[in-house]
Image (tube, rainbow, N blue to C red; front, side, top):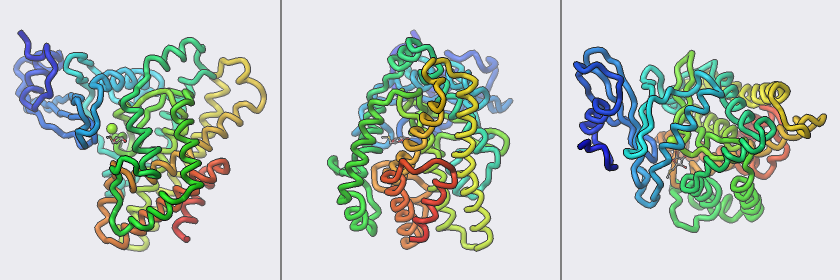
Length: 406
Ligand code: SR1
Ligand code: MG
């Protein structure tokens, strides 16, 4: 009887056996090796390769708790959500996600295309690499996967069936707590603030009553606005990249929520790259060159998103009332408002909350890190409080610039 008929958390040697028994990918004479390469907060990621041919595959397995902390008990079927969503996204945005070969509902694992010729975008940005096609690729991904899963495009019963299918309560609870609640109200005592910034964070976030009220409104919008099938965790650690190719991975947080949640995550994580470059590149010309590229990328993403969204709207909308003149621009306006708010939420939670980003934590000089954190948090407050005023890429950049100069 196969040992893979009952769930257990695999080690690399088990994964080699698993691949031989369950996947029809390698020749019988293949000499397989395996390494666990995951660096995310939740799952285990194994790379398996044939030492003779270098042919390879990724096996990703979900454990019963989060890798980052046993505090989070999570349903292991998040891996099913991930592989189903990757397959749907592959149809909506061809070439922009990895190919899934198999999902195994007993072992709660999936096998997918190995993207080892790409690199994780967060690390590449920390190494100051540029990706001129990223803005184009990521905006195509977002417009296609988001607008095309809304009920302005889909037949309403089909959309409602998707909402039901992608109800994802465990992972939504993580986002509700870690993104919306705890950075502004540390009621679980899980926040992890850089000690020299503690007093500033207490005054500027925890004690800002106006900010807390706005975030409360946003949390309930996040929980109730079933607008589109989100990726749900679209930060630069969820993107594999090389100069001519972008692949979005890890949609295990997918559920029906506000479109701006994905777009805001992308913008915030480019701002993390910006403050990292500002803090760590000593040569003035080099620093200017890299930060200007990041600024242009932020501006391009918002502006390209706007253009592609309106074009895709014209080509795909089926709902009769959505064709009323002016409704497209009104709807896009609400998406940009939510994008600004989420930019601010993601900037806050990655600095104050439990799950940090390396762009900030790798800044070794204390004062430089303090400055980087305060730029992000100062901008974050404006993105949240003034969210109605963001329409263009230039608007998003202006708020970052103001925070730098304050
Ligand atoms: C307990 S999980 C913490 C964070 O890691 C994931 O990548 C999500 O961003 C989540 O909020
Ligand atoms: Mg992830």
